[in-house]
Image (cartoon, each protein chain N blue to C red):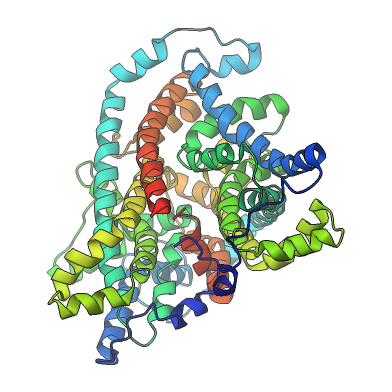
Length: 288
Length: 313
């Protein structure tokens, strides 16, 4: 249960799936497609509405028969700066989180030090602390330090999701690294840090990618810190841009849904091209 | 990789004892100092600061004068006697309980379903992750439009089925808004419950079912006597984490209803937000936040104990 970081393909072949040969399950596939169709209908609807001509027509048609990109034009006109902000904050948070989380994960996995248990305990507890509590306290500090409305401030605060998650997922992976390889490198004269950088990190590539992808998604989707730690619209991520559309009476839903589609692109793309890492991350962080 | 490495691991972990004594230990500490510092600054400090703020009159004036007078239990008194707080507390219980129940039952049903072997199983299962991966505020925008009273697709569908004009005020009617919010939150939580429960099911050895079948345990009896007992630790994790996440849910409520109409969907989390960032009474906001922490920590204790047991086993 602990190691989910291996590619799921190995799981499928280790006989975890029931071997019963009875019925090949075409009926089940139909049922499965039905379930997916129902549960993903809202996502379809988002795309559908985003392609409809603007306005607030009663009775949106079920399919965008004559796709209209006006919604996207409005969305890009309104949100392009926010989009850049989101990209910068999310990428910054990935770098920052990995720099902090990877060494800690390695230490938790391979060292025997007093205090490591305290760190692990702190990580688990940190998951229980409501974001609004953190935001409440950070607001005054940020105000004093001039970090409100700054990219740096958002990057560092948003990493509070990625860092604990990254530590847990990378630790689970690094615990499985063969000690013999690391020791061999050290016998050859590599120092602690060199062994980490040139042996451990390359071997942990998959776990690093998983941690990076999720940190990106967490930060990209952050709404609470963006809402509380910014007071002007100079540094405004796309989530907040979308929210400000919702704040008033909405007159142009196709623009709102086009923005929603744009804000969903990272999730959709990553699920498409990096599915095995996503699958590894979904179970890895929780069951610890 | 996992299969080859497990054989090697019994060797002593870590190299701390082998060489170099003190310098070595200092170097090892350097690996955890950044993470430790970060956690202290971004989790430890806020919790302590929040505890203190709960006893202070901490308002916008504080930012100009730098003064936050101590007021003892005034914030808690004000909060606990307010009508909105009582409403929010009841709402939090209702919201959390119904959301978790719904997510768990549907997630479990889907996990059991996806254990069957059929074409496209993996593809379909990973598609179901999508609602979980897109930003919460996106989901709330979608549902806000789908549940719109005048031209939302949900009313459109109901109208088509019942062949009459449906105009349910899903998000604007005080008696229905909570039900709508719970429904949306269940939709959001299904992927998480499904994924964790599915992986828990996959870890139950198939041989147990084969042996059970010989003793006549199939179908429902197999579920009751084999699946359920072995899945219990995973179930605990899903439930407790689900509760903790739901207690602090904010994005989805602010995006869908903003706590309204008339506080019908106000929870402790949104109330803490409202007091601090709408009323700018950070002291009272902190007081509500602290009460929320206490509730979360209660569940955290349950979680950690269950987790320890799961690791021990």
